[in-house]
Amino acid sequence: MTDRERFLNIMEFKPVDRIPNYELGVWGQTIERWYEEGLPRDVCYWNWFEGEPYFRIDKRAFAPINVGMVPPFEEEVIEEDERYIVYRHSNGIVTKALKIGTVRGTRPSMDQYIDFPVKDRGSFEEIKKRYDPNSFIRYPLWWDELVKMWKDRDYPLCLFVNGSIGLYSQLRSWVGTENISYLFYDDPILVEEMLEFITDFIIAVSEKALRAVQFDYFNFFEDFAGKGGPLISPQLFRKFLLPRYRRIIDYFSKYGIKYFWLDSDGDTRALIPLMLEAGINCHWPLEQASGMDPLELRKIYGKDLVLCGGIDKRALTKGKKEIEEEVYSKIPILLESGGYIPHLDHCFPPDISYENFLYYMELKMKLIESG
Image (cartoon, rainbow, N blue to C red; front, side, top):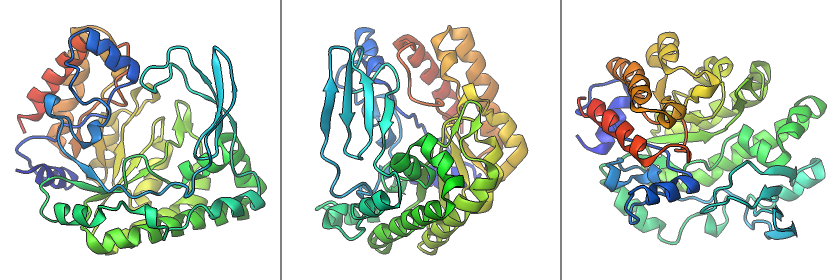
């Protein structure tokens, strides 16, 4: 079977000759540690989503359509000392970041978010000017060559690059988590307008691609939950997000896209029934620290929901016994039920040794190659 055939069969709970081998990637600090512990320095570490031959991570492709701000904000250092940097990013967000311990662009802690570009209706009207779906630089100059290359591909193809856009995540990027939480109640009409604008933009910017290429799936990047549960209630999800998910999915479905993934860390369990109602049929990466047990999710949702991920990264920081327990307690059962692609529940953090990573991959490969 080809990589694409395996992917499509997994999404349909059909048999495969082996399971796709996917992983999300590694932190900058992790790759430096692994280099010291024996990883060859010519191994790709920055984009495992598209594959990595050294570790036999399978190929996928992502259409490189620019769905960000055009033009972006001018990046600016607002304040800096030996320890911190306050910086305006190209998306207009201002953060305060810890400089110490930064490796290959990966910081040892999350930034502090200080300011966001949308504060009211007036600033939203200004932001809208940066989202012309017909801007010439939305599509790469070599788009026509990509279309030709994808026509006879043997690997799965996703519309947009991974982590590009979602509904809640776009609101959060414009307004901020705390601010959007208030805005749902303080100015619901403005929130409705922003979501309609996002939905219209996603549909409009995709039209050229959809007319030229048969895509296999689309991924909503959301990250709308934490360890304690969702950042948006089921009631708000139903009112604000569900109709827009439905409109996007209905439109994409007309062009033959059948599989709709949703990427969120945290505990999203209260929202999964609504995701299914919207037409989302795959959820990942199933963060274990938040209680997203893939075995329990399979019992509840059966073949209605494809699962990806769910292997606890914390187990890999321990010994071989703990790694074996984590791998063998989940992967064989889930593979037997179908509709599952095993991988870590996020990127590999720096407290995982290269030896433990290799042992995990060895165990996983034995299981997924047995079909």
